[in-house]
Image (tube, rainbow, N blue to C red; front, side, top):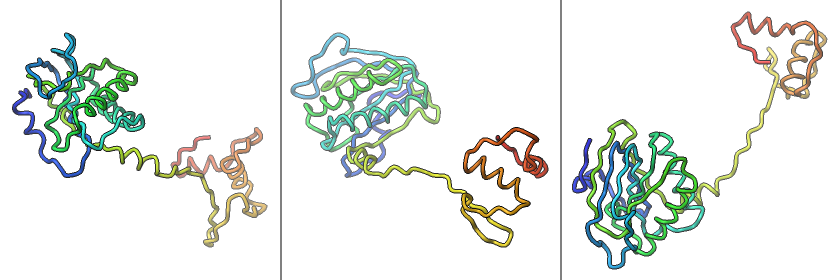
Length: 237
């Protein structure tokens, strides 16, 4: 699928009132851009390497920075992780970060937007397993893009600093194994406190190995192994 600049906005279906950073991901077979003119009063200085660019098998990340976005290192790392997550799924060979104001009606001021964009760019360069490039901020640009068209080739994400706070506030759940022994009569015992009967040597051996993690003495194979085979269970020692 080939998309020209004037048609890209049709991919953005809904813009909500919530102020979130917006990312549009296109896995592009071919992508190229060329700077045309200034779009803001004081765009970043234009260098020859930023004036035009092209890429193949690229994850093109169209990015808008909103008022609530921040350069906080935790948030920048979170945004970077989200981009790298998409990269790992589409298997692109490079990333192109492309400032794109048309994703949001609540844009940050140009100076702040550029600062956040550059922070994400530098973190991507640090963490990405593939090369990272970017288009300049503050300019109108012509571009051509050819999307691969597979199920993951067009994705979007909305991010905000509150998502980082929410993740940090969530308690870490530490799981712990708990073993019980249930008798045929319905009685339940803590496996470590069960009163073994004289004819329950095999059960005792099982509890000692699996619950108490004690190594059993060598000898013949325990009978419960036979029971597992008999009833089709796979046993991992």
